[in-house]
Length: 96
Ligand SMILES: [Zn+2]
View 1 (cartoon, protein in one colour):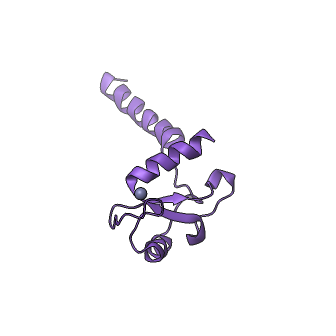
View 2 (tube, protein in one colour):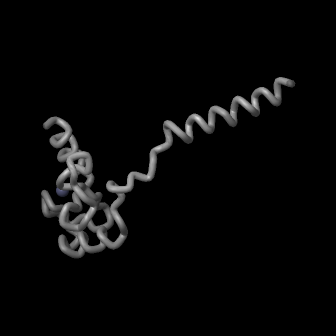
View 3 (cartoon, protein in one colour):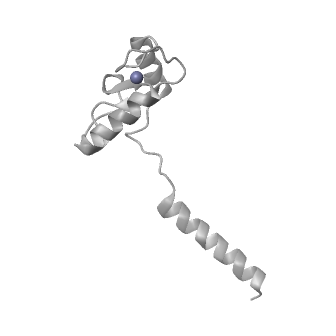
């Protein structure tokens, strides 16, 4: 087995290991559908749920009740926040 083959095999194995263990999986429950995003934006009229600033196009989606705590990705559990409020809120949630 030449060096070239070895590097190729090692590369493929490395990639498979990465794929199996380190790839961000499609998080079923965390996934927010386009339909839900549209509903949330409509409900809030393009403004941030916390600071009420108009941030159309910049809003990020946040689970009111974390998925790890049983929250769902339905519109009633999702709020749209501006990047600033989202980072503050995430920090707050994580510190609880
Ligand atoms: Zn905000």
